[in-house]
Image (cartoon, rainbow, N blue to C red):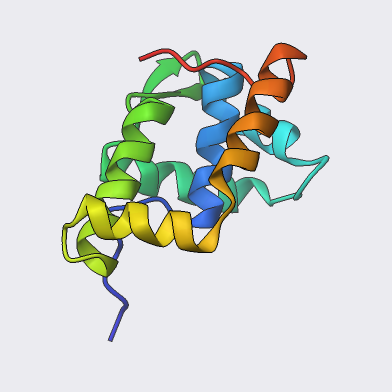
Amino acid sequence: MARKKSPFLTEAELEIMEVLWTHGPCRVRDVVQHLAPRRPKAYTTVLTLLQILEEKGYVRHQEDERAHVFYPVVDRREARRQAVSYLLHRFFAGSPELLAAHLFEEHDLAQAFEKAARARKKGKLPREGP
């Protein structure tokens, strides 16, 4: 029996979305080239993942001569919101308080906020729009 497809982004799908969010609309071969330095993937693998992302509603494509150009229809912020909502309901009974308590217990958030602020000042951490 085939595994049920997750409506959320897998690791491989997230890598492809990062390319589209960073570089804008791309042909399959462009996505392959952008992934190559970090984690090379075959053209057919990237095409299959883009088709899955389209089925999930994260991307769409347009015809450009003989190539499909894929572009994101879900931005980073919305993808993050969906992932956190899933995490919240799956592991924390829908309670933001339980999630926040877990984060405070498991992580030094004050230090993380300071580090993020320093990185943002140096231009190493992008500001995200809506």
